[in-house]
Amino acid sequence: MKNLNVLVVDDEPGICSGVKRILKNFTVSYPFMDEDRGFQVYESFTGEEALDFIKQSPPDIVLLDNKLPGIQGTEVLDYINKNNRDIIVMIITSYASLELAVKATDQGAYDFIPKPFTPQELKSAMENVTKNIFLRSMTKRLNKEGKEVRFQFLSVLSHELKSPLNAVEGYLRMMQERQAGEQLSDYQQVVERSLQRIKGMRTLIMDLLDLTKIQSDEKDKQYEQVNLADIARSAIESVNPYAIQKELDIRFHEPDQPVSLYSDPNDMEIVMNNLVSNAVKYNYEGGRVDIHLEGTREGARIRVSDTGIGMNQEETARLFKEFVRIKNEKTKNITGSGLGLSIVKQVIDLYGGDIQVKSEPEKGSTFTVFLPTKEEYNAETTSS
Picture 1 (spheres, helix red, strand yellow):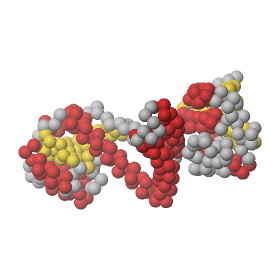
Picture 2 (cartoon, helix red, strand yellow):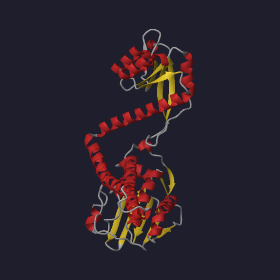
Picture 3 (tube, rainbow, N blue to C red):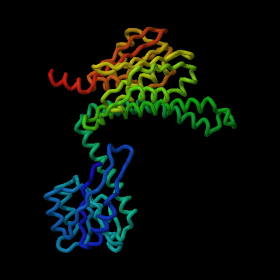
Picture 4 (tube, rainbow, N blue to C red):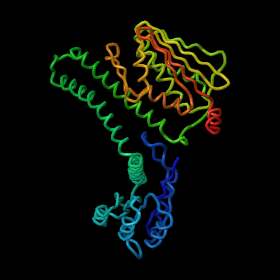
């Protein structure tokens, strides 16, 4: 958990101690944040003390009273605006001074909290401030990582989402206007098509999240001994409903000895989930999927085979590039983002591993992955 530093500037000791008490064990969590945020609270009773603190150790957030002994809160706000624009200022004010607080927001304060405030009112305000701080940091990262990459990412995302969104909107308008009839059964095909489009959008979003995860810093990885058989069983369970629909026979060949790898479990799930789901997705009805695991002194080997539509050599050569989907008569009705296997390849590259594919049209494909132990990979990269 990461702490945000909060400076409370108020000449009423009760306000300072109250904020400390409310925020002591309070944390903010959003699904899109990398980790929870807590709060470390400091206090100043005058504007002069606040300026000294800000000059020495700029906080993330300042809760600033309007009326202070000595210099006023507006002067502290003015200093922050000119010198520490990364600090977010929240004005604390009495109801009698709300007009001044509103004016302060026009001068650069983020928001204001009328006092006396309840614990929930303060917590709600801090949640909003925390979200703002996180979004600011994300904007800075995007600016540093290059406009070209950001433009390409957003272009692809908007292009891939625009078409299914338009389709779903069209289907909903058909239902709204009762174009096919008055009964729900009249729209069964429309509903199924909408659900298929939504499934495709969800797949794209989840793949983009996976892509973000694997491109994060090494320090964000959580390494442990991962049992690959557990990962394989979980992947099979997740695709089993679809496999049953297609009457597929999924066979997991349990290894004689446990096969484990010192790795990040999320990385292993990305690899296994993509390989197994593709073997099901691109298979024929009544087909078969075989999953093998093998442990060696050097690492672990994963082999996933299917009896599906297969690929020719030209298609196989393009398989691991981003946003590339193999398009032909057999795949035109199969949804996908074109990211899955490129993500798998990037994960495997992070571990110094290797992925090979053998495929033949109408006969199926076999993907073989080798992942060295992390210690061996580190030794090789250090000596090279």
